[in-house]
Length: 90
Image 1 (cartoon, rainbow, N blue to C red):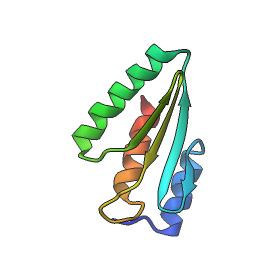
Image 2: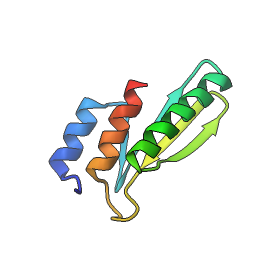
Image 3: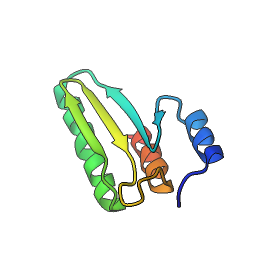
Image 4: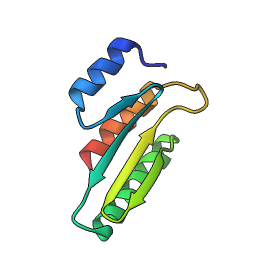
């Protein structure tokens, strides 16, 4: 289900580290080093596979940027916000 403007606002208020960009959300996670960043990506991979919803991931030494969007709908959906919330819990 596509997120409404109110849904988007509620998500950003509850998860202020995420940024809204048209039909996607993104966040950069910063770690102490490369090993911690990769461990995070592995967890993200397992959660994403379980949800059958896969983010774009950019790894730069100790920084991991995640971008979520539902490409099949060309929209931001509940799948995106739910997975983002799970990533915040790692």
